[in-house]
Image: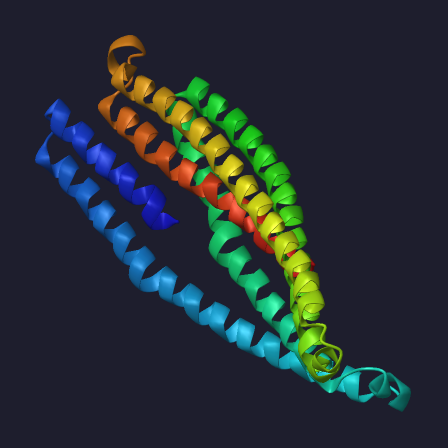
Length: 277
């Protein structure tokens, strides 16, 4: 976050100082701050975050695994007779794996997303308040659309997965009873039954693909329009709006960063849905 916010800020300030012919001493200090922010973020905060997160996840998964083992082992004999041991092991692994993915998404996606957007708006608002206000509205609308489209895509993906599971179940059933099928010469009948499940899986896959393509076209169109607004603001910022060179540079740099962050929101929504399903 520091590298994404402060480095462009100091770089824009240096360009501003060069363009206005300010003394070299001021540029030297800006360069020192730029280098210091990069060093601090790369060699201290990034490594510290990785270490703390890794230790936290290892200890958490250790505790969760112990609790899962204790909970399963304390169940009655009837509970274990009614369930496959492999299924219980799979559920335990899915539970601990979902926790790990949840923490990774929060630390590496959600927190940086919120902090970077907040920091960008704090920096831009005093310089270009109208542009910052428009950016806030755009972020809210983009997030709502992302949430709605993520829900629709999840339903399409679930439908495809369900169809695939039915196809796999039919194949397993046919192979398990292959001797009976051959004894009564029902190979053609079984093949037709299996073909129905194949077609259902194919249709669900096509529907899922179309859903993703519609989503991509929608957001690509939105992004092109927004980039056009950014370019117009940067191109005519100095002549029509009286913006400084550093402000124009920050608008372009931070705006492209926000587009990248907002595009990642769709993945975050989908990952959260998978974790809680």
